[in-house]
Length: 458
Ligand SMILES: *[C@@H]1O[C@H](CO)[C@@H](O)[C@H](O)[C@H]1NC(C)=O
Image 1 (tube, protein in one colour):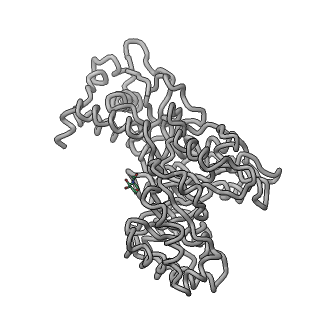
Image 2 (image 1 turned 60 degrees about the vertical axis):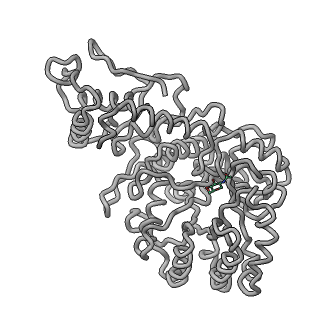
Image 3 (image 1 turned 45 degrees about the vertical axis):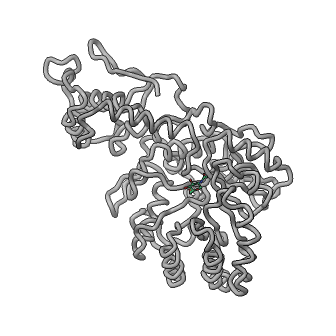
């Protein structure tokens, strides 16, 4: 590659990308703005709060005009919802026009409405009449959007539309839904609309409450699982659930359909039988998820990009029914302070570490080094050495015979030196310390004797 021969260009480019990613809003990180509460801040106050974060988009369950207006000209994109109860009239009466005229067009494009989610978890609701009216309702809304063709029309599914999701490569939809889904997906493909669904690793942990499952759900290092079908290694449950949906879409002929995570999150408290509902775990899940999305590593089946993800939720919703966890998903308290820090604050994001680094973020100014994960095979490490030293943009002299880092003459020691050098040279972004998920960041200086590992703060 021509650009590889010009490391200063690459370094410069990655610095620009870093600046873009961390200083401004990130379109792929969103939050759900639920309103089942009687103590929420005013829309204007919430809009100011959102503008102080790197959140790039917001999803509403309805089309509250005060909230939509409060986000005008804010740079924040908006997904609005048509409720399940609106579906029959949208489907039968060709009410698409009046719904769009009332809820969308008066505010657009000042308020950047980018998608309309028609219905929530309709396909798995068991309500056959509603299921059969979903596509006609979406078509009527789509037809009403002639004057705003950039707005997408989608619907949101729960994980229950899948009968298989483990291992991810076996992902497939419920056979009872396949005929309806086939038509729905064909319509969405024609209109370039994404498949939206709600993965909740928290609920997977409820049904399999083992420590290793919690570690896998919380993006902890060394908790990876191998997909026995594809041979791919999954480092966290989120990627596994996203890829299960990708596999299910592929098996129906929609391999290229974009995926949107309409909801995911973790409660900060729960009833005594809701294992793992705690502030510490909520912070770990949401914080590590955000770091993972920012790293742009992607999933094993869709590497190199991040799916648009709406975290549930902006605030706790005190009027929600059900177990205590239902009222405890908020990232912010209703007094506008953080419930816990997940690194969304625009003025100083603390979550710049790698997706597999520990929950507690390294101090902002802390020096970091990139080293191999412990469980990685020598063959993988040798491949990293060959790639890095073969690229000729880093100086592998110190690990040649006579070099200061030649001893101990082991593959893992040489790989550690080369991987760190590459990471330091290419901008110290989390994704520069990935190497197909074989690397991790550390704040322990690995230098010894005359062998100095260059370090640097992120
Ligand atoms: C509105 O959102 C679209 C789609 O994400 C984006 O391309 C566009 O730049 C946004 N417009 C403004 C004014 O922010």
